[in-house]
Length: 329
Picture 1: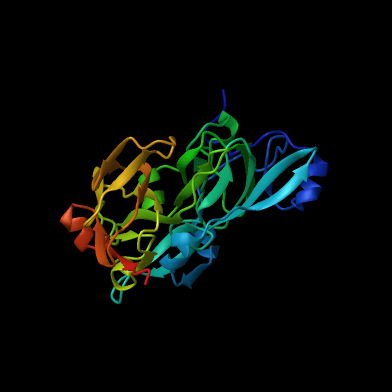
Picture 2 (picture 1 turned 90 degrees about the vertical axis):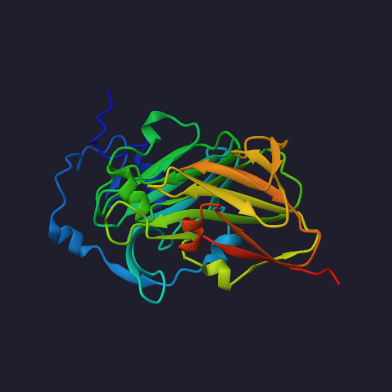
């Protein structure tokens, strides 16, 4: 039986494969490498060595930016390869509140990874976050790449598996206490497209998250795509009568559920993104933590329209925004 306290292992690799990736001697944790398997408690001096950089979140980029990785050909098979690093960053959430975030690639949420069902994906995960971290992917994959065994500070591991099934999935750190690692910012979206692509649309991503800024086990601030109230002051531009395909993910911890509502319109729901036919049409949907869907809609009239959870306390604490529908004329 695998020891859940061992560092994460992937499938067995040989030295030639390490050399191709340039990872020999870099502290990669993989099957067949027998060093660094003991996990002592991290010392305060180790935590202090983890750099904390101040970053300026840009939710506009998260909205329509998809990371398709780098395509490689190995042994006659295509590999879609991603590079992810866990780091610590200082975020300025508003004029009064700053927050030390643990995150992937210096952003909250992490990059939106995207592949097609059946593709082989490889995630090279480097941990420079001071604490042990992992990447646990929702979906179907072997146990050895499930992302539950700790990856120590300064170490690298590789997760490799076939992307399946198609749908809207997610990834997050799975180190106990998971809630703390998630609320610090270690989460992101993983989209697996169907083999036959969906119809053309304006595709956007909204990830709902919460911030426990004082460590009391409750969220004081909430956000779409990392920054409270951003889309309230920077409306999302969409075209009149344009089909919008919204990839929506709820990563709010501590609150049992959160809803999502759009004004003056209805959307078609593709539950977990795992269907090509909508399951319902509504203007509000309820989601637990880690629940996600594809929502499709278009606006027939120009103007500005609000979107937000229908829990007013969550909306008024930063999880609110506007669609600005631009006239075709």
